[in-house]
Image 1: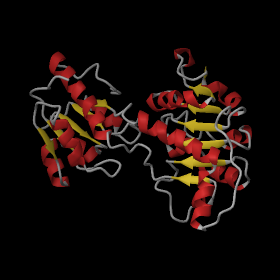
Image 2: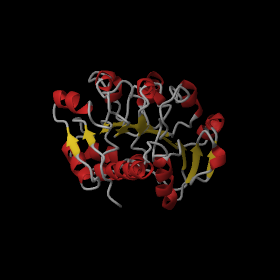
Image 3: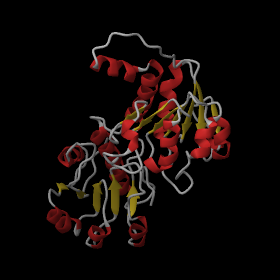
Image 4: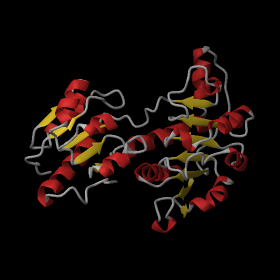
Amino acid sequence: MSIVTECDVLVLREGIHGMPAVEYATALRERVGGEVRLARTPAEERDLVAETPVVTGTSIDEALLERADALELFACAYAGTDHLPLDALAERGVAVTTASGVHGPNVAEHVVGSMLVFARRLHEGWRRQRRREWRAYRSRELADSTVTVVGLGAIGQATAERLAGFGVETLGIRYSPERGGPTDEVLGFEELHDALARTEYLALACPLTEETRGLIDTAAFETVPSEAVLINVARGPVVDTDALVAALRSNAIRGAALDVTDPEPLPRDHPLWAFENALITPHSAGHTPRYYDRLADVVATNLERVAESDAYEGLKNQVL
C-alpha cells in the first residue's frame, strides 16, 4: 500500500474491545505518511480536534464536534453508526466512514462456535466438569440443520462461507435479495417468518434500524421451532428482550447465545443471567488481535484516495 502524505490524523483516547488506542495510533503511523497524534486526555482531545482534518475513534460527541473547526473526515472505529450524531456531522459537511468488514472473520467464527456449543452441548459438559461429574449426556450434530442468517453484510457473508463445510442448509435474509449472497437461498425481510418456520439456528448480523428494532419478537419466537437457537451478534434491540426471556423460560426455543443485549451492559439482576441455556458474552465477538491493523488499512486506503482526488468522496465504507 502506498503512503499517504500531508494528512494529519487525530486518534481519540477511547480504545475498543479492551485494546488501548495507542495500538491503533501505532498501526496508523505505519501506514500514513502525515503526522498521527493520539489524544490521551479529554483536554488533549478538545485542543487537538480544533486543528485536525481527520479524526478517528469509537465516537465523537456534539460537544467535541463543536470545537472541530478543521474536521473533514470522522473515521468511526465501529461498524455501526447509530451512536453517532449524524445530523450534526452532516450539517457541518463532515464525511463519515465506518469499520465495516473489519469484524467479518472473527465475528463469523463466534457465530459458528456458538452453534457448535449448542449442537454438541459443550456448555453442559462445562457444567458437569465444574461439578467433577462423569456422567454422559446426549448431544446433536450441526450437519443437516437449517441456519438462517439475518443480514448479509460482511459478517453475514463470512458466517455463511464458514458454514459451507458443515453440511447445513443456509437461508439469507436481506433487504435486496436480488443481490444474492453466499447462502443456499436469499430471501427478503417480508419472507422472514417463512424462513423462521424452518430454522434451527438463527444468526442475527443486521444493523439496528427502525425496521430491525424489535424484529425478533413474540410472533417470531412463536414461529421458530422449539429446537431453535438464537445467536445475536447484531445489536441488542433487534431482539425484544421480554419476548426472549419468555421464550427461554417456557422452553419455546432451545437456547440463545447473546453477544449483545438490551439493555447493555446487562444489569447484574437481569433474568437472562439465570438461564442455563443462555450463553452471554460482553459484546466481545468483535475482538481480534488484528482489529487495529484491519481498521488502519481502511483508513489509510481512504486517506490515499483523498490525497489523490483532493476530495472526501467515494471512500471505502463511507456513510456520510
